[in-house]
Length: 269
Image (cartoon, rainbow, N blue to C red; front, side, top):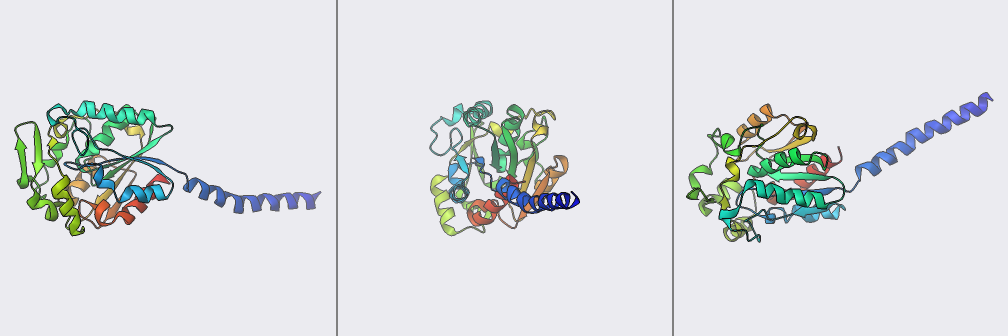
């Protein structure tokens, strides 16, 4: 009897030692659904290098033009933060299962407000050199604190309707470590964006927004949202884990492989 028990115990040990790693590997290779949210003046073009890398790993990726940007023909004067959020909510609701949101730059505010409205549909939030604001605050509140950023003096405004970044600052401010053709493409593709969303006060609760795991990817050579501001926001709104990339504001162009690897690592946590 004792011999049979020992044999059973050894068999159980073998299962624990060898089966569990395979189970863990299977879990780590689980296919995810990502929604990639571009930053100011840009469009889904932001993600043209990252999207195929994620899809090659078997993930599903939605990279869309926000209202008034890229190929979306919403008149810029009609673009509103609330209606943009509702459009994104409809996309999230149309997707089976949970999604992971990745937001860049100013549009980190989209991540936050969506998590408040759809906490049970969002698996994780990933902020990429993105605005991470507290309840009742807006993106503009944080931009005003950043004395080292270099974009502000190169933004023009169409009254209170829209803003546009001048091409003279594209390379130095956004793409200093990117191939030159990125700047050339930006000269054609960047568009004015509505100023309304930067002034929108977020409505966040610990019960909803606070229940969604959030992660941050800091760009340590960023000249648009500087490391100083990124660190300050993280002090006020801590994330579960912070990753650092030695990149400009645009690692999706300068180091897409490294950025994709971090996104996948977060997805598998």
